[in-house]
Image 1 (cartoon, each protein chain N blue to C red):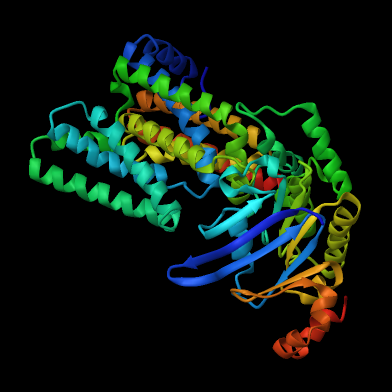
Image 2 (tube, rainbow over the protein chains, first blue to last red; image 1 turned 120 degrees about the vertical axis):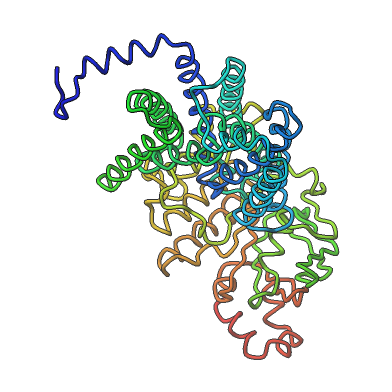
Length: 282
Length: 248
């Protein structure tokens, strides 16, 4: 069976069947799908609250924390989890208590992170190759431990979203009113931001610091183009994100492209389709 | 004598060294309809935000005799913020979802909505004549419809006190009149205490029973008749007193 482009579809299917037998690809698909699920659930709240760039900012901080981890000759994730969580709380604190705009607070912490990472990399020297591999990530090299951690964090995100759904909805729509209603806005904000930090730290292994925020932002923006209900938008963002990872991994394997970049490009395809569909719907 | 639903004692608010409110004290009785007026920058919105705990302040604020730290849904406050400029036209929620979110405060963790909650939301929307908009996206409604939906959200948990901050800024004159009629009905027929901020003194004169004139401190607080007959206020406002009083 030949497609219009001349590619043998049966051949592609047999290639997919064949690569599915590889353990590293199975790990990549499981980790990628759960990562996508967690990112997209958080993404809806972050995008609607004008915190779209927080993933980018925290990814830059994680660049510095990976450098510190490598400098200390320890697992980067051990250093990154607490430090990036602290950085996320610093961003929240700057915007809530110091009266700084959210994007300015992100910019401030992000600049500090990237500058620190560059200085450590230039002074230490020896681990630059390892460090720069985190810039772009490699989903095909995730370990079993990283898979389990990703599954755990993503399930935690889904559980928290379900338990705090009404509070998150109220805060996302109108934070002042949520506060007046007696909702513990600061506590819910802290939970949201720490979960974002955790998912970013795990995400840099999959798509790298350069692209992790796109896993958070793109499925959410795409879903918001077409959905008119809040629950529907969360569900569709999850579907877009998981589909992007699966299609992206197979496409990158078959076409021999970098997996992170391919996953993000598939996300863009979903975005453009949603954008035009949304305009058609009015 | 009615019990004060709100008691404000020596309330002060400072923004970066500038005093926005200076040692303000007053009480609002249950069933009152109080209009807050004052020039731009006089601290009207700051006063409301301080009462609601949205800005840090010094002094004491009591709701039905309880302190701000004990502020819970039991205090039954409905709040309609100043102009929904933050409302994203593409926000993915229906009008019904927004209205029913008004009951979240009364729920305990993990919050789950019951059939009665949806019924209460429907009733609030019926009172405001917007029940037919329940399934429409909030961002697709007109400014007047959005204000009514937000008022329905404020009313859904049957508040004893309704705080409205310039609620009709984005509305045309007809929608404005209609909106204020609804609020007056809530005050007269349902006994809801109303605290209304407006830059339009004519509106305050027409609907409110008491006037609080603010200019970082309280210039006047009391009945409208008292304000209109006061020689001191006449000296203070000049022609302005007549503007405020002529529609009362």
